[in-house]
Length: 323
Image (cartoon, rainbow, N blue to C red; front, side, top):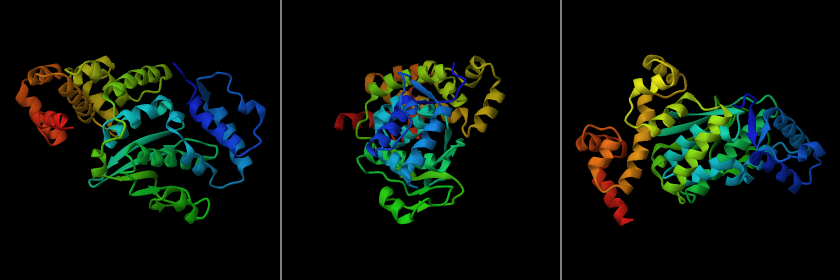
């Protein structure tokens, strides 16, 4: 497993391509990738410093983020695109963002009518520019994968504006806040149910498998991600059995998940809901779906599904017929 923080080569290529478009004079050793799949974060630091110094543009990070394509996010970009809804894509982002880069952490905070996607950077070099690149890329990707049906209620930066606020507004076209308490994209809670224009269940599950394997090799999976990976493999297992596999007690598992801002129940519900939707598409028998997911009977499954989706399994299937 990797012990050196790294970034996907695709994200690095985005910087190099931007430098080439702008005819920026980067040192030759920084332009050569040598066929590597991952770029050490320390080398990425050097590249960012050279890129920003050569650009002489205070908004160069922001412009880079606005120009990023899905392919620059490695398999994570394709995985997010294949999700069913905005909410599912946000959950996938939380689980798989280390594949793109290990220089920061994402978390979600539910505020009732709003949901905050918070980004906590760990960079020591060109921190503000890199934060702007990350949040701008996510803002534009959100619009793209929803057919422009979703845009954040607010984008906040913890640093002051690096250029004129009018320039930010022109590039981002959403409400902005500077010198805020945190770096975050704020969405309306209702946006979580908006479907994505390229949702693909088969592709999503295939990419999840590849992403799980890659995370394991990188050695960067959060405990929450490992819990959900085990739950997908063994949906009938409860907390104690999952904890045993992770060499933890159930109580210790709860405590460590709380430190990551989540809970076993929330993670289990997310996995079972995703699996339930897929099984309802494939299996004609409700009893089989309930059994495979570990429910005592059809009634218990139907009650849980209604809590997750505000509809019965029958209504969900009828919606599939009407699509």
